[in-house]
Image 1 (cartoon, one colour):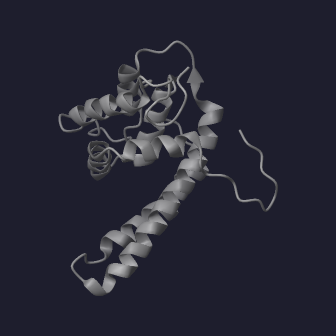
Image 2 (cartoon, rainbow, N blue to C red):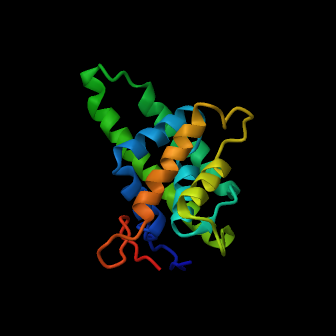
Length: 184
């Protein structure tokens, strides 16, 4: 992982961030992630699981305490505040927009912290096909509630895994993946 000088702002444009942007550009993927979020899932965990699958890596589902703390105190708080504002009140529109930008920046920082942690914990090795690995990883991203994997979420996971495979597969032109990474 990259070391940074004290006082230097880290470069958050990581492979995980670029993968997340590529996946999010697919309307179905963003709808699925947000649908799972409504079921209590963390979009960051889903994105980490998907990115690792696109890299042929296993996702254990473990997260460091500082990442959990950031998500709980910053990302979720900003999101909750944004959601609490009445969408039909035009007076609040500029504030909602500002909070949406703040939420995106909080998510970018969260993904950067996740990326740093994943470099230390994810395992590489012989892995199943990307769609299968993506499904496996996504299931490991499930919240620790007994009802997180159910008849509603399973089809969402399978579909999201297919979309991850689509952007992770090498394209016909030059071995580049749809997410901009060079295929091995």
